[in-house]
Length: 291
Image (cartoon, rainbow, N blue to C red; front, side, top):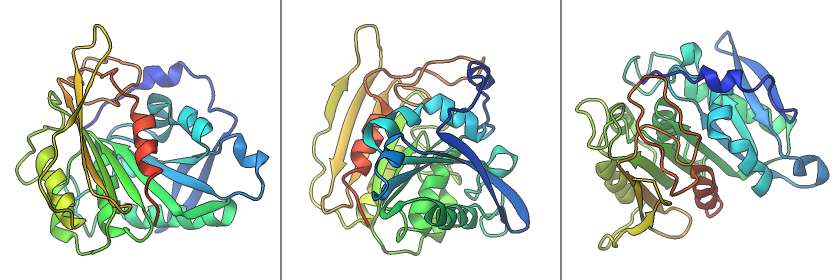
């Protein structure tokens, strides 16, 4: 999926003061990422802070992901650090579009960022999380599969389980898993795509099995949108003990970040639900999970 939200970037003349662009060299290539620290970080010099990696969609940049999702505001309210990595050629290696093993080493790049963060910041390494939109969401699922010892929970937006990740998933560790998907998404289909990715329902079932969750599936909880919002959200969650699995289905929702400012650049992105704020929902889920 490739779409651009440069209009959002033009609306902001500079990166917020608490967000710093950093870089490191990985596999002989300079890679960049933005680190946003909440004001509370400097006010509590003895405190270690949780970290959320927020991966951009295909064709987007780290700055666009930061401005579109507006997760910095949530980081201020709930006191966590946000990291926005930059993919090579604005993409992430999820096994389709490039070779899973021989393509870009984005998993290693993520590990390198985490190691650097531990040197440069006060990081609570029991509370490290990953989220992302579209290709970034697919990649967050790869991290859940390959680095479960480092990521306590993952939230994927508009991106069910990639088939190549499924084929290479060998780790047994449980990971908290939150999936958000619109039923009217025309970019990444709710019902899945053969040889590319599972359906949203099958992804929920896969992680449910992986985390050892059994028993009958409960009835989902419905969250209606405000007046004038045609979308409806249903919340389905199972599991306990720090490894629950949740599926947030957005009826008539598109390929968007729930609660974000709606935009239209002439591509089939679809409706943005106002029933929830994705950032608040993601953080509430993350906050219940630790390594």
